[in-house]
Amino acid sequence: MDTKRIKQILSTSAEIEVKYHGQSVWIDEFHEGDGLATVHLRGPLEERSQVAVADLVEE
Image 1: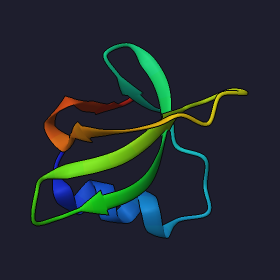
Image 2 (image 1 turned 60 degrees about the vertical axis):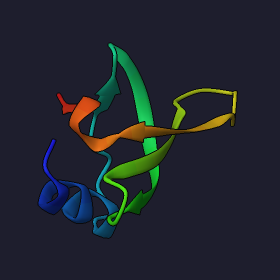
Image 3 (image 1 turned 180 degrees about the horizontal axis):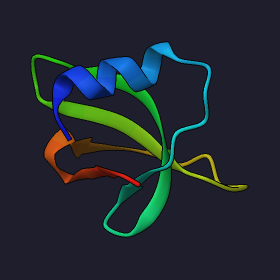
C-alpha cells in the first residue's frame, strides 16, 4: 500500500478493510519517516505491532 492511501484511510471515518499477511487489521498510526504503520488485529485483542506499509493490502 502506498503512503498516500494510508493517510487517506486514517483521515476517513469509513471502515476500510486492510489486511496484513491475510489478517484484518486496524491502522492506528502512520510513521512516515520510517515507512511503518502501527496496527492491531480486528477483534478483542488490542496488541499493537509496527509493520511495513508495503506489507499492508486494501481489500
